[in-house]
Length: 98
Image (cartoon, rainbow, N blue to C red; front, side, top):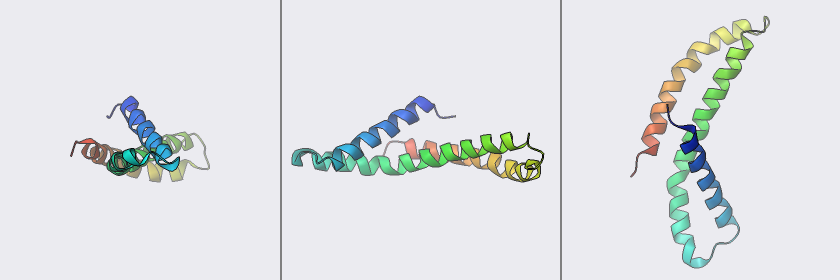
């Protein structure tokens, strides 16, 4: 499992870069900020997908307690549980330095 504090740190840095570029960074900084932003964008996209998978899994497990939703949750759980390791592996690859 990837440490969530590291994922949060990457996401915060990406959001900072996005805000800095939107606010009109000085021309001398734009190239460096843009390069870092473009390097982090696929990583942040992968982080969002991973977190969404974890949220979906938690929601499906919660649906098991609801008699009306139990059948749907039982259908979804195997797919979601299989997707999590794939998402983790993709995230680890995205985190590797270039």
